[in-house]
Image 1 (tube, helix red, strand yellow):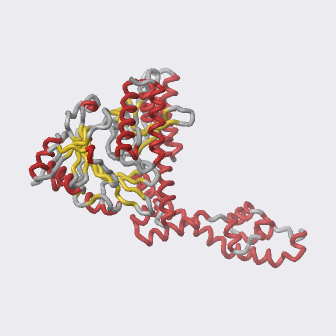
Image 2: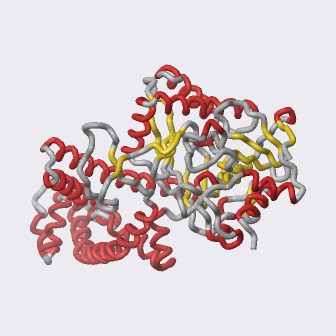
Image 3: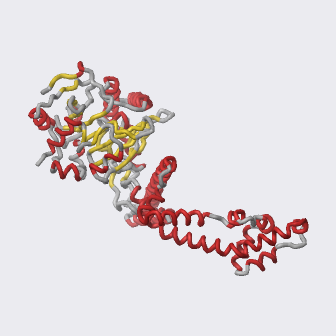
Length: 177
Length: 326
């Protein structure tokens, strides 16, 4: 049986959640993650469908909603116990309240996936690691956030995301593992 | 009705406050609080319905209420609902115009016509009202008036019957529509603004948990993938979020973000602003996070679709610095 680490590894490598990801439309998601989602709009021409800890964001730049960002938020798992969509739980099993990045990294390295550390541009930033295969960014709890998240520890994954148009210059990346 | 519910909430809150030994002013504050929450709830529901209807109308899709009726009973039910809505909204004046009997409107007025219909002998009643010696009648209108009265005699009963049937259809579909509206309504959590002097007695508001707790900021929003869309924000204890901006007077203001199916209440929004105004550490965190977001945007690590968001972030940073940070 797959585990929660496989979920994050799959997302890191493919940039998709159960096969749906960037470029999809809003109606592509309920068929995969179910109809239990919350829909909202935070700015003009923005739409988000929230399936528990998975946010599918859409942007209407040319008269059509297109997914331009997928955010997976394991940093919320310790706060709420209803964040795992049934389709994900069925495939990957239960999820713990904390997801240490090193455990995900070990799974990725064993599969031959490269991991890069992103140099910090601001002391308040989350610690970030880039997986080129799926163009996925892992953002981790750093020293700066520890006070705000007593239930999480240094190096726990706060969020994993993939976004269209994010371009990380080579000089910002250092091979981590 | 909603007004009755709001009034009942206020009265209950006042009674609870008195029973709890609160002063008259505290009881009044509790009642006002309960009423405000009920009003807020209705406002959000109406806003959500209006927004959806606008979007759907623009797209040629069913509006929310129509969708609810369709989901419940299919196309036949939707057709019946639409026809009922049209019939129920039609006035006697409109019917007279549509049936070329509007001359009676000028001669008699709509109230007299309606009263005649109520007598059961509409023809006799109308003729009794027509002044056959009047100037209008004398200048050749008699045939038109006669024809119009005949149309009313023959047709207006059917009009009222259809309106009555339409009202029954609308009454039948009302619960379906109300249930669907309730399902769309963002969750609002009752809480108190945690300031001395504003602690209120427990209030009972329809659709809300009875015992309020203190509103709390859980944490200052982190710079993750959606910061470019949400902008500076605070995460509240009930999983709702409050976006922060600056108004034209330079004051920090909060906007509700409907996140995780939760919409922050006015109390949550006020709590978020109070937190930033009173907490230097909170201001510092929000400043650092927002400056961090701007740095990430500049470095190409964080995407922002709306250039106005960058302006907003900079405005918030400026205001936070003016208020004082570490």
